Image (tube, rainbow, N blue to C red; front, side, top):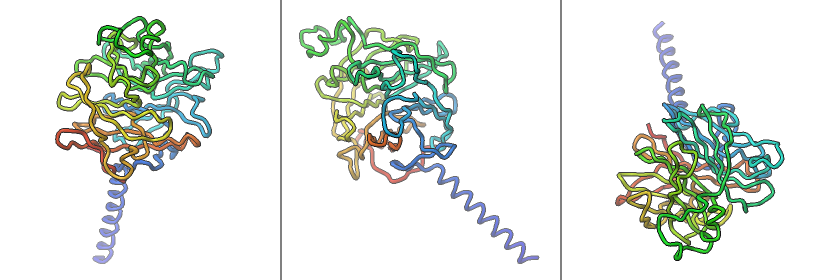
Amino acid sequence: MKKQFILTVLAALFALSASTQRTLAQKVIRSGEIWPDDQGVHINAHGGGIMKYGDTYYWFGEHKSEHTSDALVGVMCYSSKDLVNWKNHGVALSVTDEHGHDIERGCILERPKVIYNPVTKKFCMWFHLELKGQGYSAARYGVAVADRPEGPYKFLYSSRANAGTWPVEGSPMNFDEYLKRDFGTGQMARDMTLYVDDDGKAYHIFSSEENFTLHIAELTGDYLHHTGRYTRMAPGGQNEAPAIFKHDGTYWMITSGCTGWAPNEARMFSAPSIWGPWTQHPNPCRGPLAEKTFNGQSTFILPVNGHYIFMADIWRPNHPIDARYIWLPIDFEDGKPVVYWRDEWNVFK
């Protein structure tokens, strides 16, 4: 009996240990690897962003197909309580087969971001949109809205930005030719992100002026339109893929250069105000392939309980659906953000 009792206890301890190991493994993030959802399928949410609503995180991103990055499905939505295990909610915003529609199947729909408006109680989605068959010449943003975080989202409209409005900097005499060229029709709006500040004001940040200059544009109270107030950041610097966060009163933004699908060295900027002035700093990445942002490109920075997660995509243009994700914690050295490569790390509590 005593021997049997010991064996039973040992078996229970072994089972508990195995269970504990599985639990710990489930809290580990491994960048660059296949990341299965609750159905065991690699998460298909590229160029994405995260919104926290209640105690749940929602991950929105581009659905990629086997052989094309054109939008054949739309924007996907996944949810998680722990940032590691994700439930697939399917298509949040679907493209349409209606000929000539702004989001007709086969258009280019990139970098979707969603923010919640506590006044209207609506979930607001913005994304970079290129019209079907026009390459990257349309350079528009699109807006959609939903009553629930997972959707379905209703497409509202697409447009270029801030037509007939000069930025807050002042006289147009000193502005670049592209800004003046597009004054009447609206400024180009490509790679983008959204940011909601501590005071509840929201901003649309995007590559403009043929990707030479980033624009930071204030949104209306319902988060569905521009107010017409905007500023130019790093004029002529050729930045895209903006990802922004705020730490101890300072705004930080990580971007990339403009080299298409090929990775390049990350750039970093800081400012005391969302309106600037913005100061450039050296590449924040550290470790193998830091000079190429670990073979990735920034897409979002997620605040988590006083910490921050740098999110990027490892693009695979020849097999888009197999594109991978980089999620790494942001550290601070001498008051500045740094991103160290880690093969794996335990997600923040």
